[in-house]
Image (cartoon, rainbow, N blue to C red):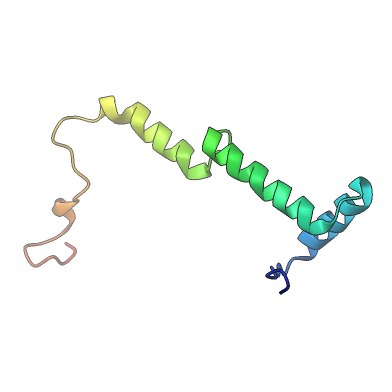
Length: 85
């Protein structure tokens, strides 16, 4: 039985994989596995952050400056029927 196939339709990924394979002498499938394993480990270790993480960090830092009782309901923009004023 053959290995399952993974198809990535990206010329940049293909070019990088082939260049690394030539440079290292390793097969492309091993390079891809190593790259994915490294990325997974970096995520687990917290070394990789997503752009949204920075937004959440800023929100958490500013939280003490928000007056008590403040909400994001924006009720003052809508009438009693839920229509914009």
